[in-house]
Image (cartoon, rainbow, N blue to C red; front, side, top):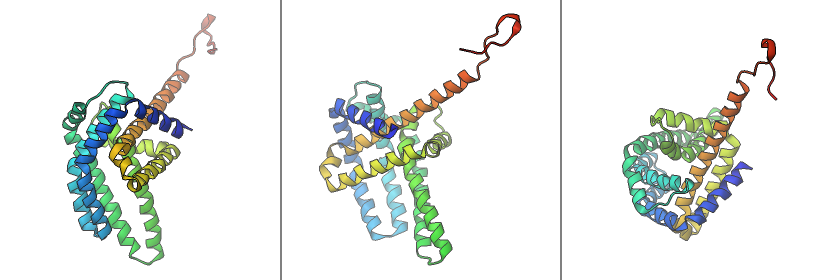
Length: 248
């Protein structure tokens, strides 16, 4: 049920801050759509080498613009007012870190796609099993995108290794929540392709806001779990004569 509670909370925040999220969506789209269109054309051409080149080129605006988008998402979830200047400030502040994080993600995506194509061209049974394995890795790799951007802003430790590790822990620690969220996000993304006005108006900003809210949900659950464990490990109160008296 956390999947739908998180979704509806993101929807409420979307309607509360519709104007700034529309501006954010417009800025993100203007920065990225030309290169995304080129990537789509390369995908249709089925050339893995050109696909990797297109992804690397698309990374130049994609990383910083995501940082700007998640900066706005963070401010919205915290109940703070925002303007387009906060989007630009987020791009500048996290440009280098975003290139590192999403650059490694693109490299991993390129390797997964290359192996998928290689094993799909091989007709053996082992190749078929490996294709299934890489399809699973592709699903996990896409799921990481839900948490990487938000953790980039939320974590005090800005090392890429730490951010990637925590994102992986969220994916594997809460697989049902992550898979459900990813599937719903894919449905919205595909719907936005068929209804372009959604992509133009709000889809990108909403997905970023939803991803940030999903990350906050898992962070809050982890903190609550740690507090319960700490309370359970706390020393019991001592009664008279030094006897241990259990807590009520």
